[in-house]
Every structure is written in structure tokens, then in C-alpha cells.
Image (cartoon, rainbow, N blue to C red; front, side):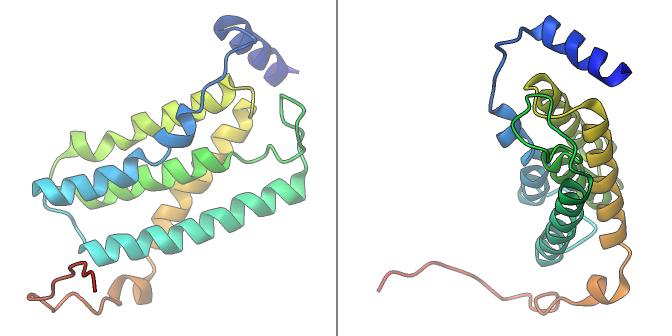
Length: 177
């Protein structure tokens, strides 16, 4: 099979003992970038509450879809540790964040808005290099993440619900009692 040959070639290139957990961290970089963009003053399309709300609902939907595929398809992982390979949840989560980053900042700074896709592509590549996913798992995960983010940004009732939008003088501060 072509996919098994790709996996074999990748593992031969990086070494069969290659292992890193950087993909566990890098997958969240696009989410961090959204809040960093807010902090440094890039003009986002949405309020911080709306961004967080979109993360939450998008994350729940992405998790539901990826786990439904994992349980329904039952594809064995390249490292033979389980039969929950299809689709890559790490890649789906990362591409969802990258697409949200793009939605938020594409008008303000196209380079910054697109930069999340580099982290997401790296996440997917590391999932293959770590022998945890096949290339098709990563491609499907990317598609799920992109699709979910685009759906979340177009659901009207979800877009319009924000109890903080008109509160200009609202402040959150920690307190020790």
C-alpha cells in the first residue's frame, strides 16, 4: 500500500527510534497566537469572549467528530498500539485553531493570520514522524479542524451571543481572602 510505503520512508528518514512530545504542545500554538494578537493590539474580528466561546464549541465539536471516526473506523495505528488512528485529533485541534486565527486576524495582518497553519502542519508531520498516525489520518484531521472552525464562525445564534460585548468597564481580577 502506498501509505505504508510513505510511513516506512518517513521512519527510515527520521530513524525508527524517533520520538518527541513536541506535537502535544505545538498543537495549541494557534490558540495562544489569538490571545497574543489581542494583547499586542492587532485588530481581531471578535471580542475575547467570542474567541473563547468559539474555541469551546469548536473544541467540543472537533472532539466529538474525531472520536466518532476513531471508534467507528477502527483503523490500526502505525505503531500498532491501538485501533484508533483515523482521524488525528492533535491535527484536527491544531487546524481548528489555525483556521480560527485566520478568521480573527486576516484583515489586520495576513501573515500573522496564516502563521498558525505552519504550527498545524508541523503538528501533523510530527504525528506521522512519531509513528502515531498515517498520512491519511493527518489529512483527514486537518479537514475536520478546518471544517469545524468554518462552521463555528458561520452559526448565527452562536455568533451573536456575548454578554460582555457592551460592557466597557468590566474587569476581572483575582482576589485572595
